[in-house]
Length: 338
Image (cartoon, rainbow, N blue to C red):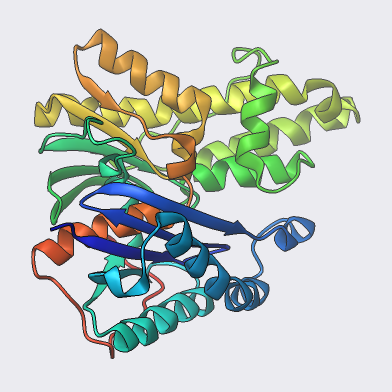
């Protein structure tokens, strides 16, 4: 008999619900919030209000698209954290209420675990999934981590950022260039038209497998400042070259430590996850590295790189099958590491 999981994701500015049956994705509905674009970043209060408006229709639509009844759901998985407190409270409260109404177990999911396990989302029964252990490069707006995934319920952080994450570096540098939010996708588009060797930016010398992107950001700002003094139109005339050089530097920083981690662990399977894993240069670099070193690489579809409930449902499925449930009194948390 199939195990059907409803996943609910509300950690930031996307309200999402998904249904999986024995790991097979039946539906994945996402309601994005456009209201934040005018502010150059997510406004927590506006995000919370939008979640309140979206969560009932989003969950209802996910159940409808999956072709199931609410009574068919075996467990409800929800993002407990990390994320924006107000946004998490909306999803957490709804999941608890629905679990009580349906009398089914509740499964709390670490949002970061969802990104790491997104490779187990199967859209077809024969779709390949990673074998344990594998090494995952988790790159998003708030996290840059190298994670050894020993099993679905056992993960070890080998390295992580000590300041800004890769996604923050993209967004902050894009903002000072006058580009719209979110800046990462815009940088990616512009980079395709520029020369990645035109500008040189500082690369950090951080010990072990940890990351740092604050020095890169500062180097980028100094480059703009010094050149704008000589040419007020510098940014406009060099947007594509700046984007390409910035993107190349970030990818080089990410891959340098990731390659060291691969050699250290001796794994044969690698993967990427998180919002920045949608970046074309990151995806190409990981695929090329795997090809050159005869490794198996798992690169998620772009729809599964951003915040989505499919990854929460998958992570919740593993925990549910392991008998790891949570009480309805469990509060959400805004900050945590794996």
